[in-house]
Amino acid sequence: MIYTEHKLASKLEENSVTEYNPIWNKNNLKNSKIISKNEIKKEEKNKENQEITFENF
Image (cartoon, rainbow, N blue to C red; front, side, top):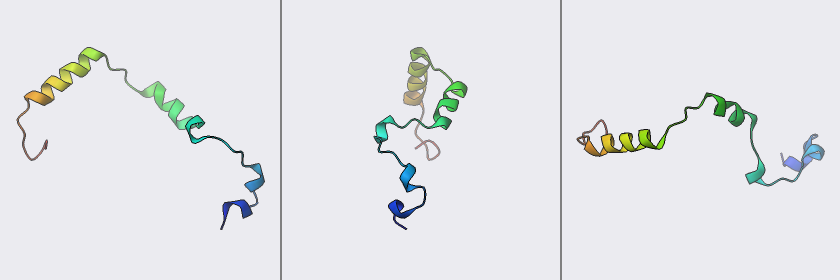
């Protein structure tokens, strides 16, 4: 079915994709963990120092 033929097609509005902010995204921000730059640097150093194996390749 072509979307313009749907019975709810008249309710569609023309919007840019970049302006779309889904509700689930806003809720997810509350539960997300804020990581400091120092923690990121520590993680990167740990990754660099790890020996490459089949599990972490």
